[in-house]
Length: 189
Image 1 (cartoon, rainbow, N blue to C red):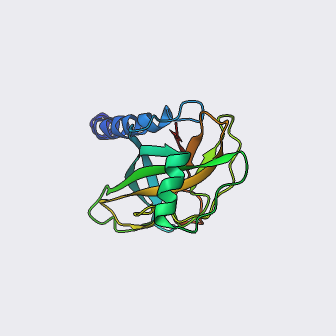
Image 2 (cartoon, rainbow, N blue to C red):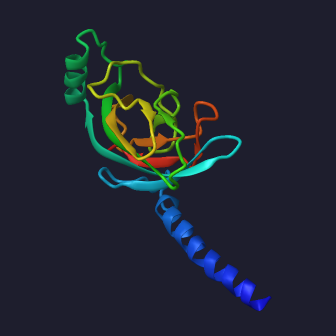
C-alpha cells in the first residue's frame, strides 16, 4: 500500500509543479501590474462544456499607436472614419494570440474577438471605456483560432487624451460559453 501511495505522489507531484509553474506567469498579471508592451503572458483557456479541454495560450501586445498616428492609420483603412468625441483620441494595439493544444485529441476552436467585451480598454483606475466601431488596419484581431495556431492583428479603442496609462483587458469568458479562463491585463502605454 505504501508503494502505491509513493508511486501516486511521484506521478502527481511533477504534474502539480508543472501546472503551478505554468500559471505563475499569469498570476503576477493584474490591473495594478499589467504586462508591458512586448511581454508575453501565458495562461490557460478551457474550451468545451461536457468534456472540457485545457489549452495553453500566450497573449502579447506587440505595439500601440495613439493620437494623430492612430487616426492616420484608421483613415488609410477607411477614409470615412469619424474623429472620436471631444477630449478623446484613438488608440490602436497590435496583439498576438497563440493557442496550443495539450493533447493530440484537443481539436476545439476559439472565437477570438467575436464579443465586444473580449478586448476592453480601461482607465488607469479601471473604469471601462466605451467600445468604438471603426475599421482597423489589416489584419483585424478577429476570427476562429484552431489549436496550435497563432493570430496577430489590430484592435481599436478611444481613450481620453489626458489618460496616460490605459490598460487592455482580455477576458476569454466573454461572449458565452466558448471559453473560460482568467482575465489578462496589458499596458497600452
